[in-house]
Length: 370
Ligand code: GLA
Image 1 (cartoon, rainbow, N blue to C red):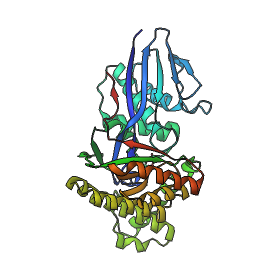
Image 2 (cartoon, rainbow, N blue to C red):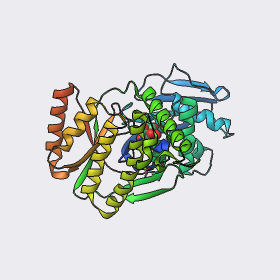
Image 3 (spheres, protein in one colour):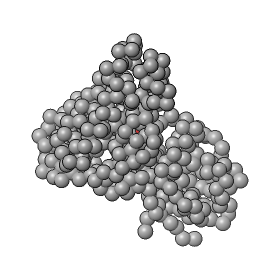
Image 4 (cartoon, rainbow, N blue to C red):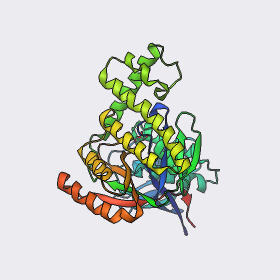
């Protein structure tokens, strides 16, 4: 039987970090790197998932679709979670084989999990002849991640993977899911994504801890009459944060509120083609993630602070959840090779790690390939 190819990109976030779960504004792009999925119908009533990156192949009968997370086959849980959720919702499922081929480094904060979820959901809907609404696809996949996988992430990653647009940055209001596609024109600059290659071991617990601190701050501000029920942490005013007695929770909140303001300024700057201001806001975002939200670390700080001091770089910051993963930088095209060498050498001297640098572009979201 013939095969059909689909693709879902990874994502990087330009600015608006750790505020999607606080009702904030975020600005990710879908990347020119991602996961290709080759679909093949079969007539033996089985479903199989295989991948070029992992050795384990998972296979089961259509009647035996798993209903909960299986710790034995880690990566397969993402497509299985999507399959199981859509099956429960009554989507007709017939036998098929799905093979994934990825050029997204896993566990490096470029949303390989959102990509595999979204591409699986897209394929199952497409094969069932259902109309596909990308924002709905994102919400479905976030639910899979929250409830099936058990990671309490916000909506940003799945939304970016599902709704990306070539040469545009997505300005997403994570409270209303209103989104605006802003032309991402870098003129004589490029966006570099720098993979720290630092394994993100503590990520799950630290992420949930930050989420809990945000929830605590919201409750304090509501109880003190500084926010109304139904408002989000990003709606707080910096001058009201004194009612939060705990200094740690107070500075977490300062990051959330100030980051949302930075996204608004960055939006204006991008629309005006003012990349210098955009770059300065990226730098300020990093400082806040480092000092107030404390989700950076020696590796990301070394990358970002070194990058910011290399000629031709007009802005750099960590991106994604943090504690390792990737940083991004805006770099003058003519300076890229000097930038890359200087940064890699310095990073290796400090951390003994070899970073990887990718030149990235904003691309379309999940799609059927020709
Ligand atoms: C991870 C989560 C997102 C978002 C970022 C931080 O990527 O999946 O929902 O919270 O961290 O901005």
